[in-house]
Image (tube, rainbow, N blue to C red):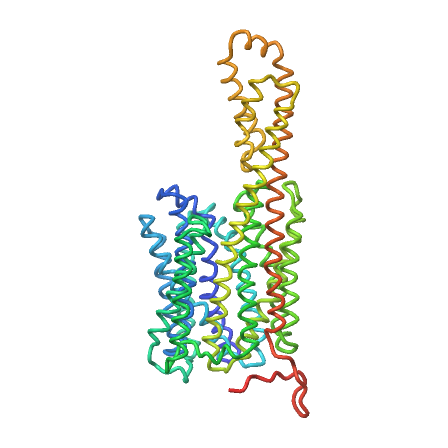
Length: 558
């Protein structure tokens, strides 16, 4: 078999495992209501089907990278894919919510093994001159997996059932293992030694667990609560312990020399903001499409998949070009495009057209592709070849942590903006009712008491009016006979005025909700801008050397 064919089969094996692991971070979300109907449980409990995976993924990713470097990347990759496939099969047969959550945690551990190992497996399979192109494809697959999850989850749930979200992983996992065994050669970091860094493993595991768990639960506990502060403090203490072990250890998990490489630091920090940006765009927009524009979850998922369309094109272009020209400009432009797309999403309204949404999401996807592939390529290009594995783990961990931080911040801001906006609109509605010269006093009382239901942006105007009319009938029945006669004599005029007041109040509430999303989108766009600055430092400047190749990159001396 030709070298080209072996490489194609090797890359297929890698992509299958990688795609499964990233897809399962988002594909499950749309099926959560179906799982609730089958297993019961509160929203907080069912959310751990998603949170359990993400928590385990973030906690174990760096440790998995280190173990792969020490004991063989092919071996560890196969273990990860086998575990992922087995837990997927068992999750489809789960008989209780607790069992499903436990299996999802194991899936997250398997995903943490798979994802960081894919980059070093790829770079050892292909020659250096192809790394830019291959990592570009890697970035495109990453974008497709993340963005297509809701759409694929919706299609599978609608046409089959939620169990098939897990079952579809089984043939993909089996094929990945078979191809890996046949076509991928073993590789490892020969400088890493074989002794396990137990102190470093404990430190980074504890740090990521407490920090990630605190950010996942911050909506329940509150940012200023004692529990949140204690969890974050514990995370910081474990992080300090981790760095102490790395500084003192003979065979540390994380060689601190990597942190002396400016391009690597720039790339890692950029990926932190990429993770936050991707999660914020998909989360905010999914809420806006379903709650404000009234789309079904399936249609919203299909719309969000346009991010993947833009990412595929730009990743394939920027990956190889960044090898030649450097990642700085591509990464900075990509981050600005993502921030710009996020800012432009703030201009959407409940009655915006579908093309208006799609164009913005495609631009966000193009920005993602321009950033992710070049920056990931730079992260592994600017470190010693044997440290590609651990550098991939660090950058992927940064991206995962960025996503958790981004969601924690943006959900808090959205809730606060929505609460403030709807409260102000409710106050305005009550004042308008009080000043109304047509409505009878008991109607003013009913409408003022119903201001809370007017603030429910998920209810249609017809539903809201129906609820208020029922309250009016009940209130009218309790009136004194003389007041009932007065209302009956003027009923048509009172009803018209009441509907007019309700319509105005409902429109004001909808506008307040739109403004809440708009302000949140603006803040989210501003949060992403530092990523563009870090991207400018994500690669070394190209230097022309006398007899060297123009544009040759000078790697750090080791």
